[in-house]
Length: 522
Image 1 (cartoon, helix red, strand yellow):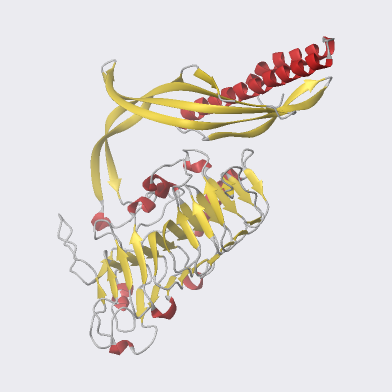
Image 2 (tube, one colour; image 1 turned 90 degrees about the horizontal axis):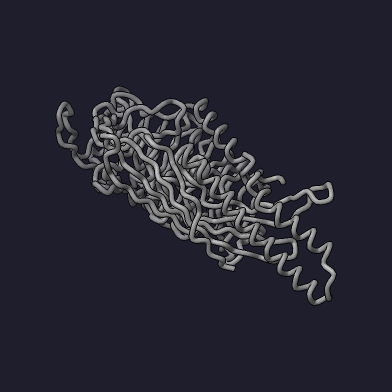
């Protein structure tokens, strides 16, 4: 048996019975047929039941290890030694039908703890070589305890160097931000003040046509945040007429005031704010370590190994006909979504480290590329079409709310060029984190809106963010803090310490019951 002892134990009796039974039965042809059907059904039941047992073991091990769980047991062939050789006796798989978590605070041995009770309903499927199928559902519960402790959290300080991190803001560049538009750049934030535009080498605005001196409109650039650049020469340069300023003395940019708070002196409205230093981006060596980890997860034994993916030929899922890339997955080549077609990137686990789709080549999106909660990493460049959509989507995702999917969806280019990501679509979408980790971003859309954040970590000729909407039109970024879950804004003036009561160490590991409520669905 190639897949664990539990399967072998569950099937050995069944297959032994079937071989023996078919060898000694001496009855009529009709009786033989009925006996074969009954035996085959018995085998498919055993395959379905053992699939549930294997899936149960996976959930138990992951919950004990890191309190996460997989969404499914992928289809696998089951082998049994028959007449001295391994023979395929059928296929088995399992899925998570439902999951519910209940938290209860209590005292255990005089200590405050939070008890987590999880209820899982799983459904196993077994198919024999003759095509007989069984579907069996079962339920189990499990609990674990965590101590409740007071914890101080330092907000907006530098993260550990090798952890996945990025600065938070609506538009953030490790180099300069060049804005070329007549009709406007807008950023919005839920609280009206966090949708920052941040650039380590300065922010520059030019009209797409006409003389800059002729523009007197005070809100060509109008953001619900601040224009942030490092203090010193970059700060001085950014305010000059050839950059964000205007030779006619007018300000064509707006931003809200930040009130005084504690030792923080506050910021006046419509100003360029000097940061104590450059905003922190991961360097190339750190990004390379991230890439190594992402690639290793995508190419692990349980990952999906794919060649170049073309939506025209990518297989469709039975039932809904969706074209899906199931994480973890490695695409050995380019990923192409054709006009009028969709590809969905599907998570496989509650653990974000398992939900990686790694593309060795370029990503070209002429249709719809839907992220249901994975980290999409590609070594090449991203390009799209005028009506294309890359968006974070909840339909079909195991993460049922928009916020849960946003927190787990990342779009990351590893390419080292100024156009690592080129955004030309005019669609308005919830895109979450858009990050050119080693390169730059070009926005050529016309009147497009992105909900999330765009970041470029490249420097010099291979970095920067260039926003030049088609026809001099506008571009809007609606900053969403859920897209910045992994990010840190490293500004000393804004650093604070939060104290809260939070779950601490696990004091009693996850302990499941036996499975119960076994129901034969087919």
